[in-house]
Length: 367
Image (cartoon, rainbow, N blue to C red):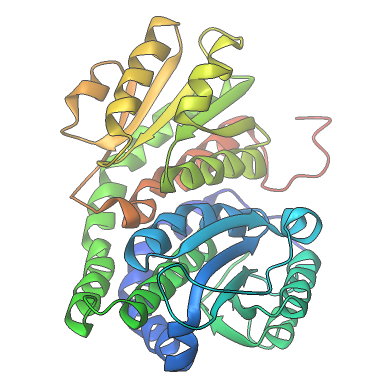
């Protein structure tokens, strides 16, 4: 099999807006028939499970389930779900009559991840309703789960997951909106349709953002390539973005990178060397933006190389940044992972090229 070239990741980033334009309605139609009305209404708990990018996507989508659908939602890696999660069973939803049911959404872009298949089997044994979310029709997860949502893409190519990551996040967000419509009397079809239009409307904002950050990411790669370690920090849904961004640097360029929560970085990683360690601060408008600005100030005082992934008008944070990757347009926090992950593919690809490394390079002894 031919090795993957880093340039593939650049193409994938630039295909994301087209994917959003062309796949949102298709995936929405599939979600609408995923469960029966009674099944949608019975759900009061959601578990999102998967490994790698699929787990990071789950972390990015958690807030949407909790705010739109008002259900308890927990993102768990497949291993943790299998070995450490208590039995799910059936449970009664707070303030509701009858039995509530757990929905387990198990994500695997390839559809063949063994741990995810096992997680589905375990969830079914516990009496949960299971949905596989995958880009691969006829795969093992589709056969194991009660239902499946296909989030396939046109003209796929091998790469550290970029388009597949967005497809997974989009699929989960659309399930959250469908669940909200079914569970909440005040979530009319009109409200749900408006939120879905917001999602597909982000495609134009993606185009503006990729245009603004592409060359900046290329220049930034010189800084990243010289660093022995990189940290990415975010909170809420963008803690998932931070983990995803760190994964792309590791997979594509062999750079040790870690994704961390804003507050936890302030408690732990701020003490680590080197002093000039690059720190990406991912800070969309929302509940954690003020804390992100204070963290950027703190990191700058410590001598860190601060890279702000932020609305270009957020001057409180930008004032403490060495580099800015501006995100264009406005977006509600629940949908912000769709815009705030765009830098990751560019940065990882350009860093790999500068280091003359290949994605998923097994033998790094000569690099």
